[in-house]
Image (cartoon, rainbow, N blue to C red):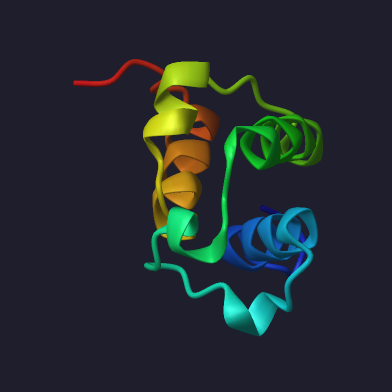
Length: 86
């Protein structure tokens, strides 16, 4: 990204907002389910992340991302043009 905010920080902020939590309470490698993540949170976050990063995220791949770190990796992969999983 060209702005000073990292992808991880932006994803964390969005996930925390969706959960109604403080970003400091959303560690990058913690399973979001342990923080109360559910399917409605997931859909809201998906829409926000797609809009913020101007990407189209595959729904199945997005649901397979269980942590902020995994979501960041998915966004970076899509932005790099490698939208297909190995």
